[in-house]
Image (cartoon, rainbow, N blue to C red; front, side, top):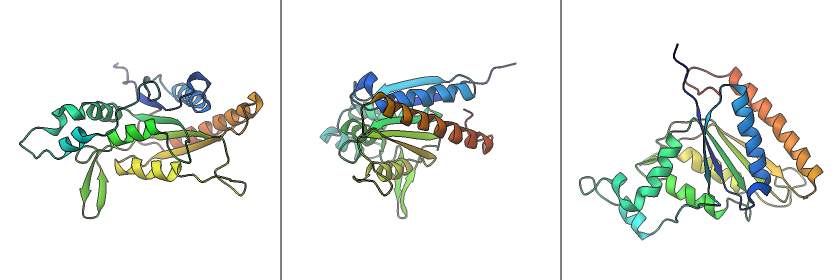
Length: 221
């Protein structure tokens, strides 16, 4: 009997703090939980802090304007990185975004990745009714961390990261998005361990719920 193919998990990491990053550590916990729930998965890891994508430049913008018949846009040298990142995303059954919150929103390296993968006529198309995503939906987990409270009556800073990521991911077709926000207001190990335990409970609740509602069209964890 032929074995079922492994799912592919794409892990995008953004924190410049490396192994000391809280968002990275909790993302690793989620990764381990996903692999424990079902068969082991193939993991593709992209560390944007260590290898940031290029910013959109004039050559990139000009390549988007190529008319059909002049040159296939997918073959334009200026779009090579964009094409590789989109293909990587297309191949993933599950996406994990691990990121800090910088100045109330996403860090520059994550914005650079977004600008490479959100590409007209490739990952979305424009219609009179608005933008329509061209990528298939898949379970997406966003694990973000900040040094201050961003929700509830005690919140003391705004959160532009969550609504922005929800909107931009939906633009390319990713709507099954779950957000877990970590508040790391203290560098004490006990404070982080409390957040980590809360995160693990959230993982279990989310994954059990997803399996209960799963269908043949949804990737198995």
